[in-house]
Length: 371
Image (tube, rainbow, N blue to C red):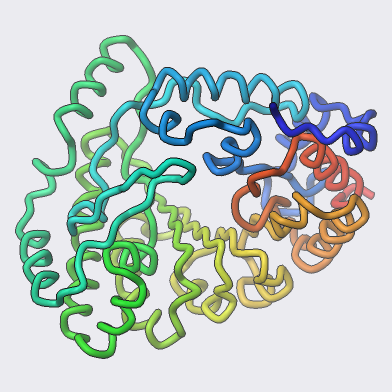
C-alpha cells in the first residue's frame, strides 16, 4: 500500500500539478529572471521499497519483469498525486562492469537490503597482487560481459533507446572504502602509504580508461562528469587532499574539461571539504543535510545547489517545520538564482506523496523571484 498522507492532501487540495511543473520548466536558468526556484525529487530503490511495502527486495533486483511492473505501478501513483513519473519502466537485466569490480569487489544481495559491495581483503600482500592484476587488465575486453553485449544488440535491433555510458561514477573516497573495509583503508593510509598511493594512482588511470571505453562503445561524445561520494565525510582534509583530490583532478580533466558539468553528490557531513571541491571546479552540488546552505553558498558562490531540505525533516516534520526550512534555505542560498530546492540527498524512505505535494506548494509560494 502506497504512503499517501491524508492530512497533507488536505493542505494541498488546490495544488495544480500541471501548472506547477509547467512553471518549473521555466525556472531552470541560473539567474533570477524566472518566476521562482525550481523544485525536484530524487526517489530511489530505498524509497520505493518502503513506499510500496515490498515483501522482497531480492525479487526486485533479480526479476526484471517484476521490477518493471512495480515501476509502472509506482509511476501511476506519483503521476496522480505529484504529476511526475520517476522510474524507468524498461530496465536492463545486465550492466557493464564497474570500476570496483576491477579490484575484485563484487555486489552481495541480501533480503531486506540494497546491493552491498563486499571488500576484497585485509592482507596488504594480497591487495598488492590485486593491484597488479588491475593494472595489467585490458579494459576494452574486460568492461562488457557477454550477457550485456547480447542485451545491447537485442535492444538496438528492437529500435529501443540506448544509454550514453561513461557519464560519472562513485568518487574515490567511496570506491576506496568499498574495495577495502573503511577501517582497513584508514589503517593502511598510515601503515602502508606506498600501497595506498599505488591504489590511488591505478584507480585514477583505470577510471579514465574504463569510462573512455564506455563512451566510445555507446557513442557518447558529451563532456561532463557526476560524482557520488558519500564516504567523503570519513576523510580529513589532509587525507582527502592526498588520496582523493589527485584522482578527481585526473578524471575531471579527462572527462569534464573546461566548463563542462562537474557535479558532486554526497549524503555525508563534508562541509570541511567544500573549498577543496570548489578548487576542483565542482560547481553543481547535492550535499548532506548537516551541511548548511549558507556555508555552501559562502564557499561556492556560483555553484548550483541542489538542496538543502533534510530528508528526514520532509518525512517526519510538521507542515510548519518543512515550510520554515524551505524559506531558510532560500534566504541563505537562493538569492542569485542558483538553487534547486530539493532534499539534501535522496528522498527518504517513508516519505509519502502528500508530503511531496506540500513541499511543492511551499516552494511555489515562498521561493519566488517575481514578487
